[in-house]
Every structure is written in C-alpha cells, then in structure tokens.
Amino acid sequence: MLSNDQIDRYRSQINLKQINIQGQIKLKNTKVLVIGAGGIGSPTTLFLSRCGILKFGIIDDDKISKSNLHRQILFDLKDIGKKKVYVSKKKILQIDKKIQVKIFKLRVNKFNLKSIVKDYDYIVDGTDNFKAKLNINDICLKFKKKLFIGSVSQFDGHIFFFDFSKKGPCLRCFMPSAPKISPRCQDEGILGTVTGTVGTIIANELIKNVVGIKSHLTNEVLIINFENLLFRKVKITRSTKCNKHE
Ligand SMILES: [Zn+2]
Image 1 (tube, rainbow, N blue to C red):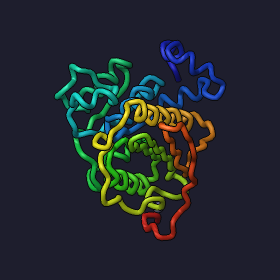
Image 2 (cartoon, protein in one colour):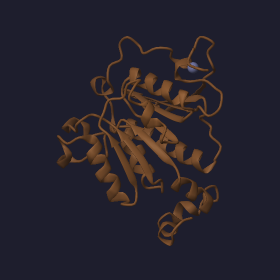
Image 3 (cartoon, rainbow, N blue to C red):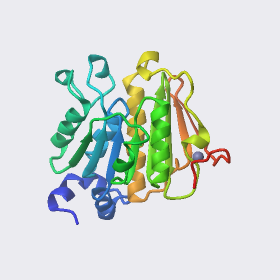
C-alpha cells in the first residue's frame, strides 16, 4: 500500500504505465546495498533514494577529501574529512526521512560481506578495484543476489548486470582474476560526468528490474567510450573454467 503522500510524491513516475501503483509498491519494498560511496555510488544512491526505495545499506571505509568533490556528488565542501558513510546517510535522510539506512564503515573482503548481503535484494558494486569486485561477485553468486557492477577507466565506463537467482555467467567467467596492475581511477584521471553517467545508468536499470521492465543488460556488459561517445554491449557466457558455480 502507498500513502497519499507517497502517491503525491511519486506521481510523475507512477504516471508511467510501466511503473504505475504496482511498480511503486515494488520499489517501496526493495532493499538495496551500495558498496562504495564514491563517484559511481553517489549518483546511484541519490537517484534510488528519490524513487521510493526505502531501505538502503551503504558500505565504505573512506573519508571525504577535497579531490573527491568533482565526482562524488553526495558530498560538499563542508563534508571534507568526515566519513563517507555518515554523510551519505545524512544526505539520504534529507531526501526522505522515512528511508532506513544501515551503514557499514568497513572495506569489503570475502569474509565480512556474507552476513551483510543476505538482507538485500540488489547489490550495487561501485568499488574502485578488481579484487573487491571479484569478492563481491563471489558472495552475490553464492547468495543468489542481483548484482550491478560499475567500473570506470579514464573515458571508458563498464556496467554489468547479473541476476544470480537464475543460472548464468558471473564476473569471473568474463575476468577470472584481478589484473596485476590496475591503477585507481583517480590516479589515471577521471571526469565526474563519466562516473556520474555510469552510476545513473545503474540506478535506471535497477528501477526497471524492480518494476518488471525487460532488462537489456542481463549477463551482458555495456561498454561506453565517453570520449568518442561509442556504446556497445558484449554478451557474457558461462565459462567452464569458472569454478564458482555450484
Ligand atoms: Zn563464473
């Protein structure tokens, strides 16, 4: 059920026949875990907390620095030096004080994520390193979660979606191990609009998936080159060498 206040607040998206009241109720009952409150996690969190999703988990162990502000749009000048999870929660509650936000001030590894992911329907990976991405992949696969992965490198953006409640490939089928050298996006250079677009596309695809609009990203990676504005999708198939599938 939706309150009159919620119907009023979300009227413009409820007016979409693909969403309607039923879709809005589904959004209300969805639980999203965002891992990494950075350049990708910021727009994803901001849009998802404005669309009627009322339960969030945010994982990050970092503090806000001045050089984060050009792309991490959850944060402002006055937030410098504060922990990202605390400021993220504050910003979400400013958007809607009815939202429940659980924060986890930690760096994910293969051990600490297990007890957290169980409570969420969707996991958004906005981390900036492949080791974390592979760990998140393994845990989400084990617990049959729906996983969105965003990654950026200079002018390139990658967005993956896996629905592990169904049989299919995983990130390791595409990339079995972390590359030996993988510089962080801030060191090789990144524009805020690149991470912002990647995070926004993830939010859009997640909303579509919740309300039942057909996904055109399941088991695929969308690769965007923002310098030449080229978009392409690559199908990911299950690798017989990947031993993570039971
Ligand atoms: Zn696999």
